[in-house]
Structures are given as C-alpha cells and as structure tokens.
Image (cartoon, rainbow, N blue to C red):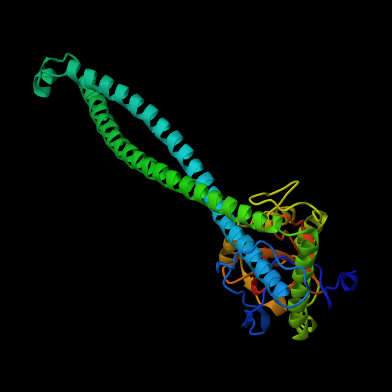
Length: 367
C-alpha cells in the first residue's frame, strides 16, 4: 500500500514541503530540508498566468510560497492559541483551588475566634482573686489544685488557639495574594489567546483570499506543484538510505496510538480542534496517544520540549516527528517512511512521506 501511495518513492500530497538547505537531524544524518523564512512576504498578484512555464510558472511558485507561508504562520499562531488555552485552564483550576482553600480557612478562623471567645470569658470569670487567696479560702485544697491544673490546660489551649489564628491569618494573606497574581496571569493569558485567535483568522483569511483569485486550472496546477515538491523532498530523504536503519516494531501503546490516528484519516483539519470530528496537527497526536494510554502536552512545541527525544534512525511507529525549526508541526510515524498527520486548513487527516517536510527531531511518548 505504501508503495502504491508513493511513500517509498513518490509521495502523497504534503502540506509543507519547501526548498532550502539541507539540515542535520538529531542523529547527525540528513533529516530534512530547512524551510525558507515562512514570514517573508511574497509578491501580491491577481493570479498566475495560464502558461505552464516561464513567468506564469514563476508567479505560480510565488503564490504557492506565499500561501504556504501564511498557513505556516497560522499554525504557529494555533500553537500559541492552544498553549494559551492550556495555561488559561490551568490558572482557572488554581484559582478555584485557592478559593476553596480560602473559604475553608475562613470557616476555621471563625470557629477559632468563637473558641477563643469562650476561653476568654472563662478566664474573666475566674479572674480577680489571687491564686494564694483562693487556695486559703478553698474548703477543698485538692479540688482547688485540680481546678488549677484545668486552668493551666485552658491557658495552653487559649495560647494554641491564638497561635493557630495567627498562622491562619498569614495563610489567608498569602492565598489572597496568590489569587490576585493568578487572576492577573489569567487576564494576560486570555489576552494572548485572543491575539493568537486574531492572528490565525488574519492569516487564514489572507490565504483563502489568494486562493480564491485562482482559476480552477490554476488551483489544480498549484496542487500539482505542492505534490511535486513533496515528492522531491521525500525522495531526497529516502536517498540517504535512512530507511535501512529504521525498524518498524511498535510498542503496544504505540500500536494503539497508530490505530487511533489512522482511523481519523479523511477528517478535516480545523485549528484548535482535538476531535472527535476535526483535528489540528497536535490535537490529533494528543488524542491518539490518549488512546494509547499516555497523556502528552497539547502543542507540537511543548511535545518537542517535554517529551523524550530519540534519533531519527531509532524511531518506531507511534513516535512523533516534529517538523520545522520552530516545532510548529507534528505527525505520527507509521513505519516504512510514512506519517499520518493533519496538514493544514483546507486539507484532511492523511498519510504523507515522513521526509516531505524538514524534520526537527523525533519524540517518544512511551519512552
């Protein structure tokens, strides 16, 4: 099947193939090709010429680069959005926990104040007469001594209550300060999330606007160009002989993750989506590894930062391949030089060549 799809030679369409210099992978082998600056502004155009070569082809290539740059930028913004959303949820949980702790401390403080009041009243009623006089006047000296022991215990209880009240007051002040700080962080993360959302919408709208200018024939040529470049990148990766060093033995958890991911093939990419009907690239890997019994970070950048890394030559099915120097894309290795991934808006979850995009490195959720 993989040969038919072209993954051991020609490949299926990949969203992010790009030309540039060769980059070294974590194992020192050629792992992919470094992407051109994705933020570089391409020339504005009303659409490429109809010719297959010459200026028309050059302009079509420029349009392709511009669209790819916009989708790449949108994916980076999606990562920022997802990360901000994760932090918002974390801050909200911490604030709820603090609120519960403050409420419990306030109830305990009120109970201690009542207890302190009772002890103070008891001491007041027993006061006013020196201990020596009360001993002389008491008809039952032993009873007095017993009462004195009880009085000392009451004094110690009052001291303990006062100490606990002091500690509670300090804890409440600290918790109130923490809650204030977390509210400020929450507001900041919400602002970051909203900015990322605006950035995503702006990039996607611009990419759609450019694509909408193209005639049907030009859109087909653009897709062919995308496929051709993906095939070229995959072939360069395969030509290194790297598949001779990579085995296809998945772990039990990896098999479950692969099974889930491949079952999503054909579902639409939607930024910020985690299933069950639509996914973005890291939303797909997140849910796939949850099916494999592992909880992993939400974004491709955090997956790259926090999960154990392995050499490209040591990867196995279920491992996650992180793409581009900014770790803005992720796919799941299937074996035989193929990945399953959610490419970009306007595309569906699909199988592509593992080397059709510049590889940053590989991480293993079940290391």
